[in-house]
Image (cartoon, rainbow, N blue to C red):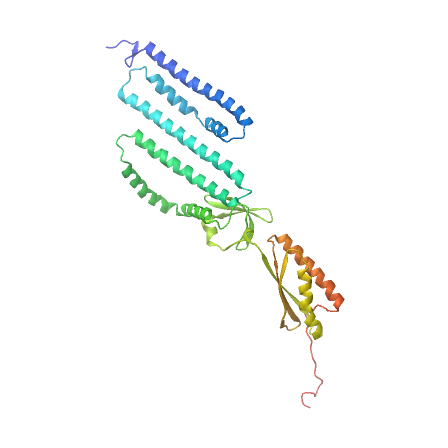
Length: 355
């Protein structure tokens, strides 16, 4: 029968050695991380490259459980342990390594995507939006791959084909349960790949309008003209008719003028030319046509069409205001009046119908 000084076939000295190794490895790892991180930060502040910034970010993402797993495994190497204990420590180390590897990979993807989108957001919002969404997809795929690799290493003889098939069947069941969430997810991918709008575009959805602020996996956020944030589910958003005013190159403007029926014919003939002259004199404008369109019940109707060659709404309103003021001045100078909604009632004297 073994003496009390021998515990699990190891003497107290061997346990003390194992504990010392574990503490030394754990402390050395923590100290080394802080020293290297401090020096790398100083170097990163003085350089413009992204490599040192990425290394700083990865070191910051190194977690304590990874150092602890390495320390426990290193200390166990001087002990005589049962095979199942050694196997458990090995699995613990493998799990910690793959989890840390996933954190490093996810951090690297996030760092690269954030840096790249910040540079492109002002110049090319379409590409920035696409890269941002692909970064999310990349992180999801990375975690799935790491999980499969960890399972393969943890469980010897595991049939990954059967596991993937089982996950596929389970995925169908889960998909039926969360089909609305998955619908928004695939709708977000459709938005990113098809690009009906990107961050910064001014869009109109039904009777709601605003500037796109964020395109997420489930929802899209729009800042309205009155200041509040409007949130649309991605799948619901794609079912609507969307008007993207940021993609507008020119704005077609149609307006009407009404003059009285008593206006002389020679002045009616002069009105299209007057309108052409006024509109053509405005900046950022291309005149299309001006016609005596129809006879109304209480006025003669002129239809005017022109194009504003820039999409800015404020420019359009400034142009229309200048045109309206110029028309008022010119019509007053020409003695042409505007029609008002009126009705004329003709009364017949008594006996007129009989005679």
